[in-house]
Length: 51
Length: 250
Image 1 (cartoon, chains in turn brown, purple):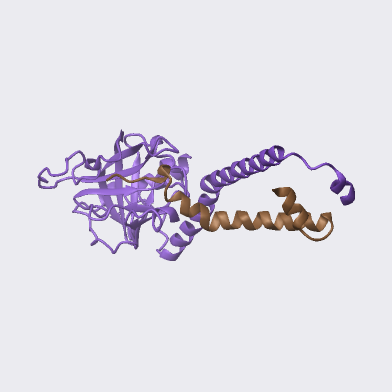
Image 2 (tube, rainbow over the protein chains, first blue to last red; image 1 turned 60 degrees about the horizontal axis):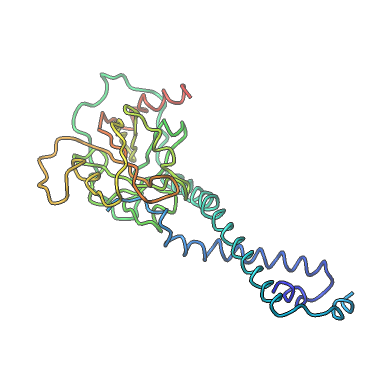
């Protein structure tokens, strides 16, 4: 899976490493900004109220 | 180099499938780890920023450090503000036990996404307002989103719990803490312990109630701290003795 990604990326190895780091950063950003807040609403440990 | 790899024998199908499954599981593990980092650390950072901004936006006058003499304190009933619309900041909470610089905005409403997740303490709508007869009931996060009630279990009977509005201090005193089930709404009743459906007697006491999750990192139960009203004073008269004492003592 990741081997395919590695082969699909253009350029020499150092360019691919930089691209992968950028990709990883983008994934973290998307998770932190949108995915995790949406999931957190369904997590039971965030309930503070009675009733 | 690439040529050498091409000429290598292709791994069997089973091996390739195992490899993909393994990579998926590693990815899932990393994502779950990221979620924990986000929940326990990043929500603190972002909610803390919003909380600081909320406090700054209030623009309330800085109270004088002077402590009025005990016999100079007002003796009449405290002024009680009308309930503000849901979502509006109307007070701050100061608890010396939580630290000398602890001050967190109180917003009307207990909606998770818009109020509690932005680092605020939420006020259960339709419970009493600060200083009011009945129960001034609050909720806040204990482990995440800047965790305003992180140290709720450290409160001892007699600890001051201080509420500030734009121009009034309300000083309460913690009386007891208990652990209840999430469905036990009687803890925020006008008289704590009064069951739903029971007739509300004529109110004579002014309570404060803090609610948060329990055990930490779980929501199986709720941690509750009750307190009773001690006295009030206008902000223009200075600061409550409980606040200045804590700064000197800690």
